[in-house]
Length: 348
Image (cartoon, rainbow, N blue to C red; front, side, top):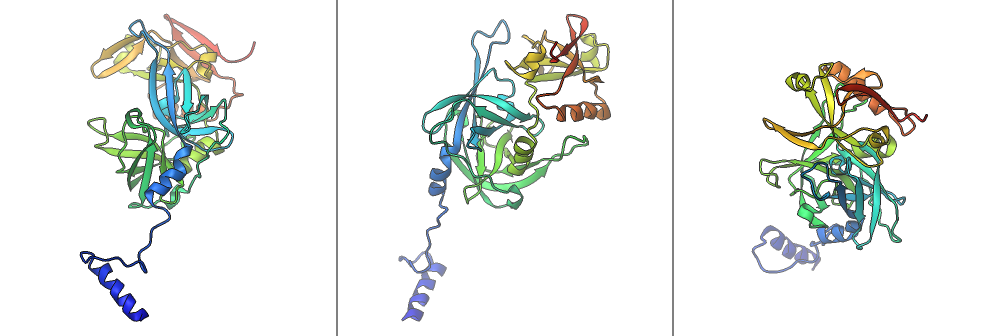
């Protein structure tokens, strides 16, 4: 009897067009997508980053939406650095509808990852389980949860399409890894988690390479092992400003006393850059295809190392910044209103 039952079932396995059901061999996986989503979704958050008006044409604060994932019971959240690095105010909204203010406590702009700390921890905080991205293989199915175009807690599904490593020559910049995926990624997905089919986070969504700006392109997520190393083990220093590199004709047009400088674009409130006294630009200009803000400070040196286009000297600055901690005394030389001045966070 058992032999006949097995033979009967094999018919339906080999010839699915036949009507029937063979429950002996058919299995409903515990990791079905809807079950995984329900289990891991509570750890995913919506992030609203607000920047104050920067110039005379800006009448209202600029708010951007991104995603993140809770990684500790203390209220630490991983997200993309480009989404929060120069925000003046950050609000995190949980799946329950609860919200809390947050601040950046670690960041690596090179790897595009940042760590937030919320001020008020919800009573039933859900923490994601972090996996081992070294085990991810090309072809593995992955799930991405985020807020594309502000539609929070949206699920998209795809595969690991490739593994890409950065190329670096600086001592402080260890090669980091991106997981390439064909899962749909759009604006607002940045910072959201990429899960494997066991429900463990294996990446933090970073960016998409697309001619349209939408999901018709290549999506990339920073591997979770890279994120853990730079945010949890090392706590990469967050300086709280971004800048436009002036070289060549632009450096000469700004009357720089050297071949390069960092034109400050934005400075986040209460960031180390703000506490040092850096001033951001506020006048938008466009030269060719390049758009940036002028009127702000131009950093000429950091810790005595001049800003330059030379790879060796640029690495010297990067290596110094890579060793910064919250206790570091930061020394900057900047060009402001035609004069070179010194800025520091050293207490008088």
